[in-house]
Amino acid sequence: MLELNADCLKKAGGAWSAAGVILPQFDCGEMSAYTKRNPIWLHFGAGNIFRGFIARLSQKLLNKGLVKSGIIAADTFDYDIIRKIYVPFDNLTLMVDLKADGSMGYEVIGSVAEALCADSSSAEQMARLTDIAADPGLQMISFTITEKGYTLKNMAGEYLPVVLEDMGAGPGKPRHAMSIAACLLYRRFLENAAPIALVSMDNCSHNGEKLKSSVMEIAKAWNRNGFVGADFLAYLDNEEKIAFPWTMIDKITPRPATAVEERLRGLGIAGMGSVVTERNTFIAPFVNAEVPQYLVVEDRFPNGRPALEEAGVYMTSRDTVNKTERMKVTTCLNPLHTALAVYGCLLGYTSIAEEMKDRHLKNLVCGIGYREGMPVVTHPGILNPTDFIREVIEERLPNPFIPDTPQRIATDTSLKIPIRFGETIKAYLANPELDVRALTCIPLAIAGWLRYLLGVDDRGVKMDLSPDPMLDKLQEGLRGIEVGKPESCKGRLGGILSNTSLFAVDLCEAGLEDKIEKMFCELIAGPGAVRATLGKYCGQTGKMPVM
Image 1: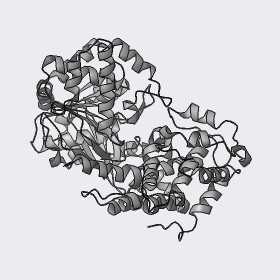
Image 2 (image 1 turned 90 degrees about the horizontal axis):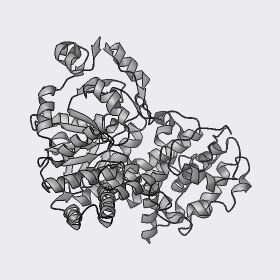
Image 3 (image 1 turned 45 degrees about the vertical axis):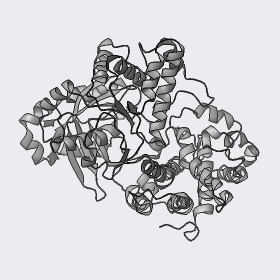
């Protein structure tokens, strides 16, 4: 049996090739040693999207001989990922490409030179991170920590307890991801004040702006509390020294699938079993993901950068990144995913691909994307919105070999709603030629999310809800509303729908409250009401064309 470790790669290279697995075209040991001496790229967020996309970009550059240094990975949230997935497998990942025809491609990713726990309680780990961050040759620190990793306050506008503690304690032992980033930049400032780029590669709007804002907020608090001087703030705010490029990332990377594990076992590869960490991360030595992927990056790197364009990255202007991100996040993919997630949970689906066979649900996402979203999309120039959304609806979401679930996509929906739906509503309000009250599918998606929050499926059976930082507060706002009693929701949604933090706009002032309430009341009429309501609004292909 083959095992995923450095020794087996060296001794059994022919057996790996016979199994159809592509191996790194460089010496992983030499690369690791060189990177530790000459780091150029430090990445925070060691999960699947990093392993299956970002680390693979580095591998492409290493394979082409364009760089000698790989990536150093660190995790600020789930240290079990490092201990259980990186360390036992010598920082290697087995990448599995899930193709639409059912075939799979296999490649060992060996570009991670070192894996660290960004744990301030470990003097050794933090000392190593500090050394890396202070190296004048380090060109960038990138992030895939999810949108909530940049969040300093709760929905009430209050600082999170860990953030308050970090602000009061200074850069000595930071715990929040943004405090750790600020701490490492402070050490770099003290050592040599060398330039660097901090690159958020997370799937959220204006991600570079969010990253800078949070890091600056931590630093300003440290300045007020006497831990750092104004010169450090000036260093952070000087774009010739510290850049925060904006990016757009797109690749569906679901949890590891049992069917993939079985396929790998059939190829003679041992030890591919999944683990669930103490932080409830589902992860395995392999990453399974779709083939299509996009990364668009603002080309602003004051200390230089690897030739990312040679790995397929679009290097461009901020304006182009912004247009591309808005195209994807507010219209062509993310809103469709969220609508499928909440309705899929309500209807008992466990596969996004299976949902796309449901005529009502496909009509819903076509309506959100083609009919309601496309009128406010600006063509980014580098990707055609029509081609992009067609690929999403006709190829990517229906791919039966992508084991993605609505339950996974439904995680943290309260953080996604303002961008995925709020931005389109705002664009309608800003355009005198468009009538926001004519929207149907987007209000139906919002009503569906509120129906989902009741925790009862369309059969009337209690269902588990995915984690969400606002879950308790939102459910409290819906307390007393019952499935089977549509009269219980009359006049009850205004407090939620007027929350601009949730929706990026006051939906009551926008004139959508009555429509959403009507749809919500229809959705809670009783068992089967979700299906009936979808049939009412999305049942006629002539009304909601499937394109």
